[in-house]
Amino acid sequence: MKLAYVARLGLKEFQAIKFINKLTEHYDLVILGGDGTPNPEHLTRDKVLIVSGDEDDILITKKAREYEILMDGRIYDFKGLKIAGIGGLQPHQDIKRILSEDSKIDILVSHYPPYGCLDTVRVGQRDVNIGIMELNDVLSKVSLLVLFTHVEVLGGVYLKGNIIMLGLNGGIGRYIEVTDKEGLNIGFNSLNLFSH
Image (cartoon, rainbow, N blue to C red; front, side, top):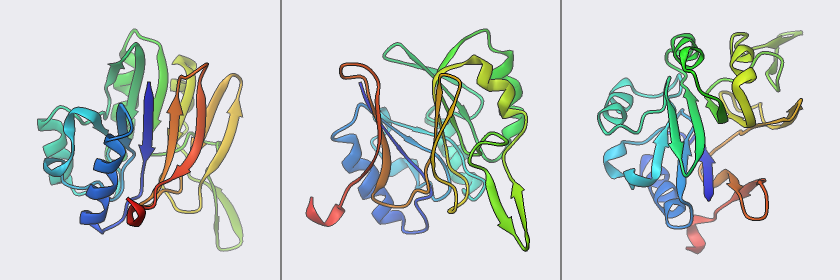
């Protein structure tokens, strides 16, 4: 199993589509974490899942829902892995739906970070946590990994118990790679579109 996670792709839709479709040539699944999500009509939809971002166009997320690739508030079974999505448009509703499911989650993909997890930003003279507190309730269902994005300044690795949490600054060319070759392998990666 090879999975790629991308987010915050910006407004350059043509480059974002090219980047995502190039990743689908090398990965079994590409998950988009929101903000700058391109029109799903132009994506390799059988290898893409989408979590909405708070800056995404509502028509794009509606189209993703029509194609049944929108993860918001849903748990997907992918090659035996349970992957849940919490979007940026209605995160509290998505959290409520995920918590009502009687299922463990291997990988949680959330547009927002959990409160207290790589979520501190500087506002004026103060540090402010921008994560969602209720996401911490979902963590009790997660066994392996949490992937999130939301704002440019966030990013990095955080360990909470046995759960690895990765924040991705994102952008075209940058992604997180997850493979299960000889155990779970996770890392930050990049793809230079101009060399391919």
